[in-house]
Image 1 (cartoon, helix red, strand yellow):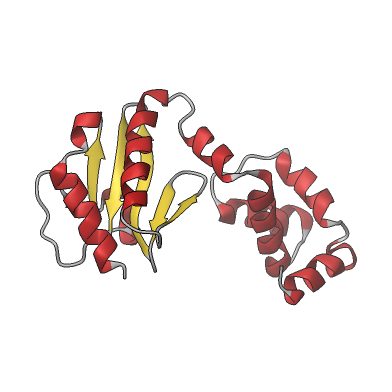
Image 2 (tube, rainbow, N blue to C red):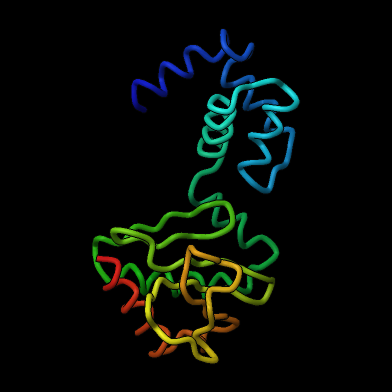
Length: 180
């Protein structure tokens, strides 16, 4: 933890009226689908300044969920997709020791020097796999990024283990190589 953040946490009771742990308790009773909703709640309902509200929400999320907890929560009710997810993770790990796997609340980022693949359980029966493949043409299978927006350039929908074929693995490898 850097000195600025330590100082901010130390000043929190004086500046906001509560300690970080007290704020975490308040946020634990709420359910926000987006970071900004938590920030706006603290600002509007509790008069917390933007900087403190942003820090409180960020630290609450980071400390309340381990990476395994985040992945487990993503696949709750979607357990049929876990073998697909595990196969994808095994493959991206095989690409090189410079691959970082970073679970978030709703997806898992696969990073080299930058994100090159995003794994998201989209429905109870489908994983959406996002890619960073600039200048690659869109096909029937390699669609435009869809719900990923600018985080990815392309998307492939995976509904079974058979969808993890040589073509898909080549796209993953290509995205990995371009992320160097």
